[in-house]
Each structure stands twice: as structure tokens, then as C-alpha cells.
Image 1 (cartoon, helix red, strand yellow):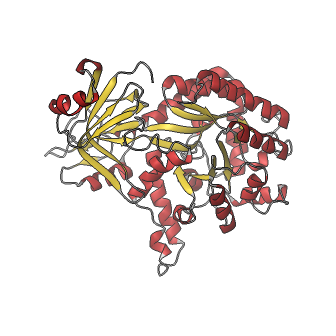
Image 2 (cartoon, rainbow, N blue to C red):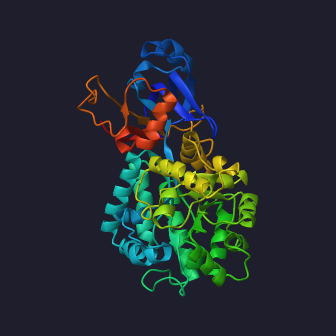
Image 3 (cartoon, one colour):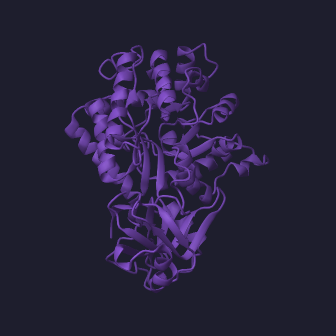
Length: 472
């Protein structure tokens, strides 16, 4: 990003080396240029005093043009989280879901709130709070659903750009008059497509190369769209090579409705494929109940899945089988969903992912090897929230790790120390729920962070080299 100063970060850097393994770089330095890109990783820079000889001279940087950030003892740098499925307009309803299931919840809670955001003052308040809260939880990239309103969708894109969050922003398409409510739907397929083109053009106007904010085609889900609008969106996708996001197989009632509405298609996934929307750039949220045939089709088309364990649980939709999808070559990331979920945190989603995988295991006989295999590790859950999510939103190779050439989308994590009297070592700093006693290994520290951590542990957040969130 033009205008940034060059930066050098010193400390411990932890990221996913693979699904199964985290990489720990201690006493390391990462150099970030004025465009927010990592240009040098030095794995043996033990102090700021070594910067001149080891880094500045080699890079040809002047000391006066560089900001140096040194992590405190116990702190570490971790890639920013990627939320591959989140409904920004639903943020005020986080935690409000009662005992409803998906379709009832949409009608009772979701559509009234979303439709009210044509009031742009209200939309600004909601979207600003959503972006700031997700940034505070370390989410550097979010795939956002907006509403059907063009101006409100454009406002969400504007706010993401100004607040510095990397985002995919989609105007929700829903034109099926037999399913959508009278007060909240597109007038026609033609109108739906025209409004979508308007939001695409707006994003192109404010961020021409989609460096930070990108449009994303957003048919809400198959029942809300006519065949005409879905085919029109597929043509836009082919012509402009844009990403797509939608829902699939979230609960059984929804699946039955799709089967009734589209009897000519062999499955829910086939509905999207028959309309040209199952592409390598398609994000399918939930996928709780997909069949073997659907999994093969999704993998063949190289479409991706956003796993939303929290909302799948609170709406009693079911437990998605992440290992099962991985075994079938489906790329998976994490989503908070909101407001069906109750947390804006991908760290919470990683925690819930590990727990839900154990519920999947409980449904498998203990003598079956799949009983143990179904359980996801801490390392795998964090992979889903970083490199997995990057692949889902089409940013693999750009974000999610600390390799040279990648962009500096990063969070600084700090965990609280306990003194000899059993109190926080620094009473002036809120270290959250994670207490460290000093004898934990780094693997144990990470486990305690995943299972006990929250936004209080996220001390600073950068996107493309720009500091976008900071707390004590």
C-alpha cells in the first residue's frame, strides 16, 4: 500500500507448515516493504542490534526509513485469520437465535434486520461495528454477504477499504417470488443481475485492481433464486472471472425444499452445477449433509467449502465432516457465519471445529479407525483458519503464512503470565483468560490459546502492512 513505511518485525513467528504441523520460527526477523509485502525472512536475528548488519545492508534500506517492531517475551506473530463465510448485516443478531431452525430463523430474525439496512445510517453503524469487531479478533480477510440493497452493499465495500480489512463483498441475489418475502426480494431476475453489476462496478471504482476489496457474486441459496438469475450470474462469472459464494446442504429441510423446487437436478450440488455456478472460485457454505456423489462433483469442479461449526450447532443443522471432505479432495476453510453463530471470532470457530469433530467421532463405532481419524487436532483447526481459508477465498500464496513474497496480514498475540502469588504478572494489562505459568512448551501455549483465548490476546493486527487494530 503506497505511503507505508518499511517495517521489520522481530520475535517468534508461528504459522501452519502443513495441515498437521505448525512451524515455529524463534529469534527471527521479517522485513516488510512499503507495499506491505514480505521481502526477507531471517531466521537467526536474535536482537535489534543485529538489524544493520544482517538486514538493512543486504536490503539497501536506510535505518531512518524503517520502523522496527519487537515482540515482547511470550508474544508471537501469527497469520491473520480468514473468515470464509460471514453475513455482515446480521451482526446485531449475534447470539439471538432462540430454538429456531434455519428456515424459521431466516424469516423471524434475519430478513427483517437485513431489509432494514436500506437505512444507510443504520447500515453504517452495523457494518462499522462488524468490521471493527472482526478485526479486533484477528480477522484480516472476510468473505461478506451484504443485503439486496445496492447502496448498502457499496457502503460495506467502502468501509472495508477505509478501515483496512481485506474483503470479498457480495450483494445478495434473491428474486424467487415463490420463496422470498414480498418486502425483501429483487423485483426480477433482470433487476437482480443489473443491481449486481452496479455493485461490481462500484468496487472496481474504489479498488480497480481488487487489491484489498473484491466483488463476489452471491446467490443467497438455490431456493431464493430463479434459474434465470442463477444462469445470469454464471455468465457474469465466466465473463469477469469473479468469485461466487452461496449455501449448500445446511439442513435437511432446506435440502428437501431444493429437491422439490429443482426435480430435474440430481442433487443440491447438481443444481448449482446445472446452472454453471459450481466453479473453482465458488465458496459453498456449510455442506453439512452432502452425499458421496455431491462430494465427488464438488471436488471435480474444484469448488470450496466454508465450514461453520458454531452456526451448524446453534441451529441444530448438523455436524459437518471436515476429515471426510478432505479425504475427498475438497478444500475447506472456516466461517463464523453470524448471526446464526454467536461469535465474530475465527479462533472460536477453530475451537468449535475441534469440538464438533469429536461429535462426528461419537457417531462412529470406536472399533472403526474413522472414529479417531475424524477428530481434528489444534494444528488442523488453525490451518483451516489460515492457509485453508486463504485457498477457499482464492488468496493462497498471498496470505496465510510468512514466506517471502506473501503479504503482511498478521496478528500479534500476547498471553498473560502468572506471577509467584498466582496473579497476572502485569495487572495493568488485560491478558484475557489464558494464564501462562512459564513451564508450558510452545505447543502447549498454542493449545491453551486456542481453547481459552479471545480478542484480548490479539494485541495488534496488520493488513497488507497497515496497522488496522491495536490494544494494550
